[in-house]
Length: 240
Image 1 (cartoon, one colour):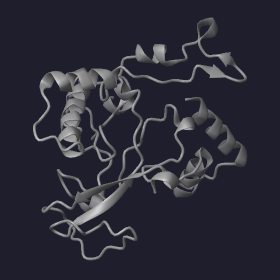
Image 2 (image 1 turned 45 degrees about the vertical axis):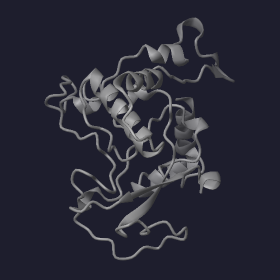
Image 3 (image 1 turned 180 degrees about the horizontal axis):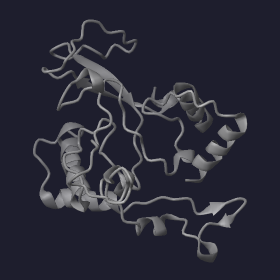
């Protein structure tokens, strides 16, 4: 799975307060249901980008590390919390990491940016005033729920995180907060920047190319795109 679809396995137990129970598992790899309580399933996930984290709307595919929102410090808090959870979980550290180390990890993560700098047809994307490349991107301010559409009222005139009607937890198959039927099958839409270099696509690596992604949504939402529209959309996605 890692070599074919670029995914890693994450085992997560179903919460005790879930609206559903696990009765049977069809897992050809033999991982699911083998934990102490027999209630763990395997999720195969694509590693998320490690750059441009300043533009995140939620942390991790299932958003379970999104604890705060609506302020510049919220993302820092979430990433710091994640750094410690990963250190004690995946790295199996016996003690939590100190605040100074957490801050250093977050500073490194938040300071990494990638962006296209050259196009074979257009040439340098930093020439004659163009604002391509990672340096220009690093100077752009973004706070989820403040200066993005989801934090605005319906007419787009005001953006106030205190009154925003949205939930940044947009994926959870095992929602630690609710464990509702309605959450099954949801997943976070990843950052679209730099997609051309990160095939395969979707959280489970099921789409081999950007055209496969476009075809999936064309069928899923009955968009009825023409072949030329699909080509144009793929070309657009490759420029981000």
